[in-house]
Length: 622
Image (cartoon, rainbow, N blue to C red):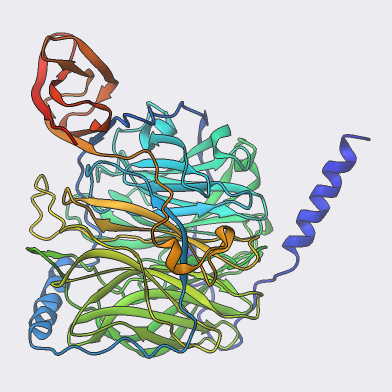
């Protein structure tokens, strides 16, 4: 009884937390059974994975380049943007919304995961546990940090999952923290755009410390068996379930097929047990990207979940779709209902300029990007045209009970593009509607940077606060795409047990090497744990080990095992950097050259029979 009783008390406590927040029903008419529910499916358990960390000093990283299509209708979207870009050229500057709310304050901030410019965009995502462990991803790498920015762990996404049955093209990371279960959940997918290899990969941390390892599962990325592959993921959690949404694209034409919703019980996944799940398809309203909404503060809600979808690339829409999954899988009664919500007209804007380069930054479309549900209201964000083709933040508060929406925009038309927002609750309690919104900003007058802004309970905006200034423009010379990728996500997560309230964000900026780098920061209305004045803190940054990446590109005719090392001018091995598998096609390898003293070195890439690459490096005095 001494063992059973504490476990029983813990279970009752968890159930009490679950019971606090019910799924609020919509009282206006809608469409019931607005989708087809699949029969129960079984996910493939990939096993428990806990690979060692990469060398934290040298940070070697091998990446295989892949290209993907994430646009609802590229041809239509490009035509819209051509018009909007012409509008921007003739527009005049305006001002940001007048500040009446308190400005957000940056406290702890530091360099995040660095993939050495091996992929673009970074797809930033971040989560923080109640005990202060931060998990951050970029394409295609993960890092764990403490709140002071000390790097605890680093690994490639492929090696983190550590399963040879998967193709070596893993991308589109997402991570969330389940504050009730006190666990992390992560998402990745195979990215070679073929239906036969398309897989949705979910990881569930064994404990509240991700360094203790993950249980990984593989779900089909071609659920309809119609030649589709899965892309553009979103995650949301209820009391008992995880919801994964995505878009299916035809592997031959690259065109959008339809959106789907995966509904997965959490409990067996946290235990590394077999899991049965189902998915929703043929969803009414023809949504493109459906956003599932987790509870915005400590606790959760359910059974069931709220979801929203905007009009994607449509030029001129007043429509938002509100979806409700009404119950858990286990109930046998779950259905998906649809409610149409009117809002202020919104439309796609043009692409963004950047200082020092003629290359535009791809601003995407008006798909819903991030949000949460709290006390009867859905908070969600995307970017849209706020005037003359300029992008601004479009922030929405949707009251679930009567399916009514209030939207507000923030930006600086005529001067800057504000894109890829993410939102988190900063409210002191569930009745406080205050939020922090993190976003990316660029223009012909600045390099791409990351910022935050607050919107208070009454809907008043603050001034925006710079988180990390850009150091240069973006130019991925290995990418044949005429415009530079931007986004696709900015990461944000509330620190659920902080008092006063705070959030953590992961955004990106243009670095001196002309590729994207991630920056992580704590945001609040005070300087938090350091208890120092804002002006004093500007010079205080918690650094990771300084990363000064060297990158080399090489192509392979077939998959093979390779070795990579550094030798000095006499041929003596200075450092063995990599010993593992590489994929056919174009590969990029990076490492931190800050460990090398001044001199001449050679980077050598070879297999069992021949030298693949032999490249001289000259390290100058710093």
